[in-house]
Length: 471
Image (cartoon, rainbow, N blue to C red; front, side, top):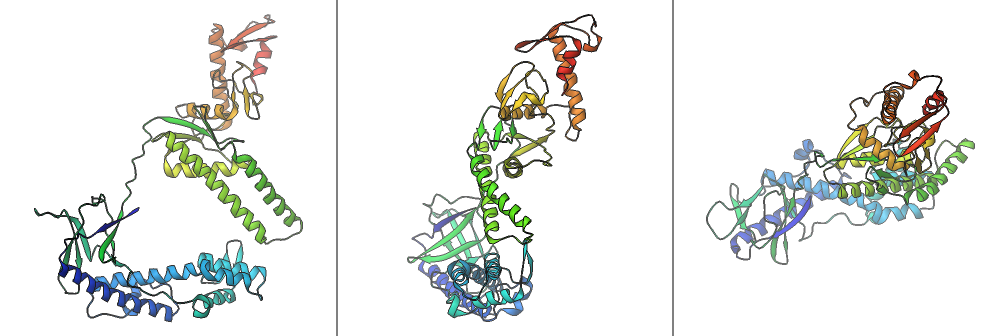
């Protein structure tokens, strides 16, 4: 959502401005009393069900404005307490002389994640002693500094129950109006908005932040982002996660080729440290290992998110055909990049999973399957001689598999291989002009010329042809 700031009109009646000024003064005074109460009681949360009896009442503010101010106070104190870790307490933890490494880790978790209860957290545990120590620092003004103070520039939060806005229904020279509650019960103050603003349009959120800036009232609206309709109607594209690239598409494009060297270097360091600790029977991970794993996770998310954005930008509203891969036995970059890229694509575009069996071994031209077709990143078909990048071949085969009605997502690799073998033999026999299967050929034929797409292959006899196909 985007924030849009719109000014009140310069021709606004001064009496209306005065009413808003009075409302702001009363709102800010009540807001400060709620914040002071939360700080006094060492609380950063107050559930909606208890706010009515916990916070003070007011004789001049309506019940709806009171609810807005109470929620605003809770959000203010919560944000202030969470920000203390980065502003002050992080340095206090690092320089404290009486803490060991594990205690510093517990205090960091309390500050970074707002932990308020002892127990298991992540791969470690946090004691109640450290929880009490951290939050004792939060509420100690000598360590954390001053508590939140409501200044004159502090905005009023106005919900849909206390504020409405939109184009005028009457014939006047003001196009948009904002109607807000005021201190006079049952009355509203109507403020005309500046028509010169380019953001005056339908599609704003219902709440408003109102404050006075340089003697003029401003209103901050949130513009709702309209999610585009994604139906994948502009075509399909096969996307294969490669061993050396993050993604290879069926149109021959490679993405993330520079990622693997950096990943292998960091991944090897993490793996060696973990293996060394296991050999020494160290069950808890070290601070260094946690840091490296977070760095590795962030590197993967950043790289795969960038690739996903590039794919969507180049192929908008496209259905991306991806492999529904079983990651058992898969190691290294492909294992991590596969999960992250598929998750990122699935949240931003239309995806379709297909059966990946033999998609990296099958030639997309003649259909011949052999694990020797692929050597590293190069693909050379042993039957027809087609050459290509191995991961691009995988993307082409995944794209073709998306329209294959014979091969289902849950079919076993054995069934997939049988279907593909039958197709290859039928295609090869038709190219030879033969109307019979290979096992029906005359055994006396000692040599057989096998024609295929783009190349002629010579085999010694009928059995050699069959054995040459089998993987």
